[in-house]
Length: 213
Image (tube, rainbow, N blue to C red; front, top):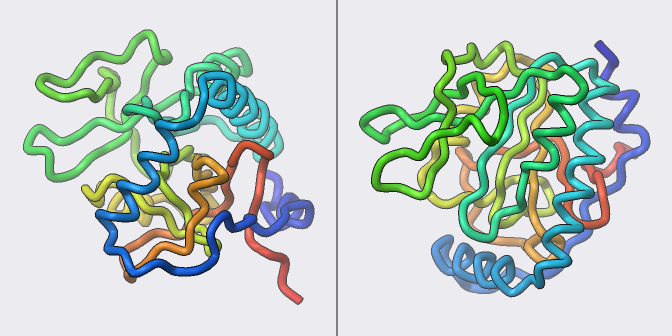
């Protein structure tokens, strides 16, 4: 597998849309990010989904990824259907999150693609019906983010499911945050359980942490 450091040499720091912290709690930051996402016009959403597909397929190819974890979007989250179809065309196995029956955790499970997902009763979630995947078998995971901090820690919907799952990935697995550029916010308070991702794809393309001096 290609060394991640080789790819990082070309990455740039994530531009911050709003650098100054505002005295809001996480619920207020989520509401702000949701409003930003909902306000984006349809052409901008489609363009972002297209850019996400191109960047992640190129990254997965460079990493020689065999299985990629995706998400099925809720509300105004960035669409992943184009990405899923492009990965399948490359012969890459897909996996999607599936909540535990009690709703207190999640696993990733294999799927033939977005058309094979099934609705979870009484929710907006679409879930895979295939076998559960060992977290160490995921080479790359695309993660939804309402907002991202400059240090690539993500703000999710508050359930903590990704924060608990991502530390189970094998060392070297790549996590890609998908967030609108206007949702790159210096949100507070960041807590120890808030997971930092490897890189991100806002509308302008692939970004990673600043290179060490």
